Amino acid sequence: MTLTGINKALAREESKALKTTTGHSKPAAKKAGAKRIVMLDPGHGGIDTGAIGRNGSLEKHVVLAIAKNVRSILRSKGIDARLTRSADEFIPLYDRVEIAHKHGASLFMSIHADGFTNPSAAGASVFALSNRGASSAMAKYLSERENAADDVAGSKVKNKDHYLQQVLFDLVQTDTIKNSLTLGSHVLRQIKPVHRLHSKSTEQAAFVVLKSPSIPSVLVETSFITNPEEERLLGTTAFRQKIAAAIAAGVVSYFNWFDNHKAHAKRG
Ligand SMILES: [Zn+2]
Image 1 (tube, rainbow, N blue to C red):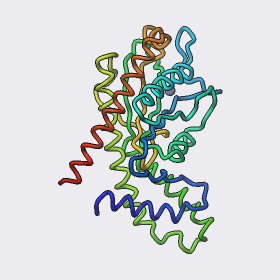
Image 2: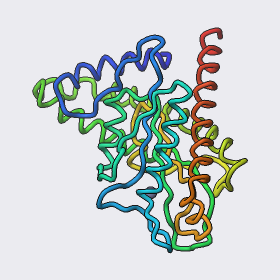
Image 3: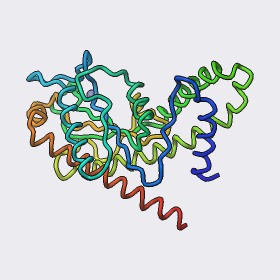
């Protein structure tokens, strides 16, 4: 079974189960030639300040400014970039993933500037979902779907396609993680010339905001707000613009790779 086939099968299953539920929505179908939608997710917000620098900079403000810069750069390149939050408001983690699905996003990127206990920790890093995270995401996703399907269809149909769904889900998410890792490497390659890297390759962890089963998702730690020098940089328009330009270039480069990759797959 090809991945396209799997996606179709999964989409069929989803449209059955999700018609009238409030469960995890499937990404909106892309029309041919439709603009790509990039969901940018400025971390934290509202009562959740995120990390705090020694001079009192708040991560939630810094990352919103950077995300807005990324949005305008991507828009100037014809990509429909949107924000999960454009103001200082609190959004629960699972809602951020849900927002990306509702908008039919092609990719999801959470932007952070977290802290560490050691103030000498510095540099940018990019994370994708770990496979272990994927299996627990699957469990959550399936349990939500089952609960939702139960409400709509009653318990009779509940377990019928359970095994098939698990297999399909696993394959789709494995592919999504592969694309997330590729996206991460494109972003790191663009950041490298403009800022030091905390880790050279995409790291993997079980971040809740990365748990979309079908949308390639990465979390970018632009730098450490607890590092005095990086806190200073994060406060400057020049650095915010520089790091945003690198992130946007990484997204564009990923989309170019993706299109070439797909063209190859079709020919082969
Ligand atoms: Zn953060």
